Length: 449
Length: 118
Image (cartoon, rainbow over all chains, first blue to last red; front, side, top):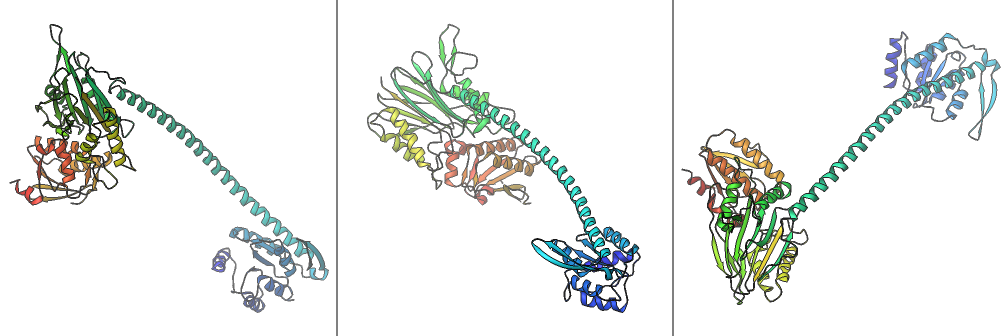
């Protein structure tokens, strides 16, 4: 294959080419018709390039034919062996055809002096700790030496070019690397900014929660709030609305993350006990008295406020109650929120109390229903988000209303706070090992007039 | 007509039949995909009748209800009708908990639902 490519290249350069597939055949061919020059591989079947060369150089009719060995020159000993075989020139592989043609021209331009053989002397060469005895003529030694040197120069030039290319590649890599470092620090900066923003947002959200020391007369209050991400869609609160009434709610905005938490904060602005333009819970009558809005009105108004021209798909559920503390009467309304659980002080089974109503922002222009519940002294009520009954275990089984009610009822003899903590613990236990996938919010209130 | 990733679609007369392919409809990315695919499907259809089949759905997030609410409003506004069918009990619980079982037209299975379109 290689021979064929070379043959074409030499023919193109005006030479007549004959070729053989091994040294033995080539020698016969050369004896048949004397060539001007011989080019031979070293690795060949039957007779190696060295054998072939030696045979040519010891043949009286052929010895003045210049002989080029194509070598990979992996070992300096190759040079010695070439010398010993009588080769005139080395061309190292891989080679440029032009380089080989130039070597051929040089050899053909200076015919070999056959008489050189007479002066051939046996030289002793020491290489790699080995001594070699080589019989070679001066012209041959000189030619071979020059070709070895030229090969080295040629290889060196290739190395210089390769080195330059490497240098360019290295510069470009370095530049890319610098760009990556810049990009990386930019990402870190943005990430740090986002973490700060999230922390700030989470702080705003915590402001929607009850004060650390909720202290309401005749009421015991306990709550837990565990967002499943840094920003939650849930929130709750309980606070006095006027001298006799207390407002309490749990809100659960659909989804999680930034959009949901933004909506939660916006909803929170309307659910404030401070008389203001934004409060839907209380307003001041012209005579200065504080008027407390009914839960159904609050739900209806919230629903009206959160209607956009085009529904974004974001909505919230809410259970809002107003407890008249002196009488123990709880008025409440629900916007698609799970029913509250009452644990009667008398020891009866847990009761679920819900009200009809679509989630808020979901359906335009709907009226919300209001219901009332008369508490008995010592009764407890629990409001919660659907993250409690809908909490999934590893087999995707929901925790469910029954287990929830049983868990709450089981804690009726102990302190209120312990019963709320116990329910949270039970939910977390249920969700092991993955943990709850939704925000978990629980608010417990005991009426003890 | 099966060119979508999240929904498998077909037509029965003038009614668009939509089958949710996923078992779990939970994350926001998936919801966005469903939203986009539904918009592509219904395109400029005026007052379309649509049946959503939940046979494959085993879990869905509360945000999916929001998406259904969006579809419900858009379709109702165009005098179309949106109906749902084959909702398994666990999923139906989510509708019931939020009272939305009373807003949406929910049917046992596809044949029952289709019969109510006439």
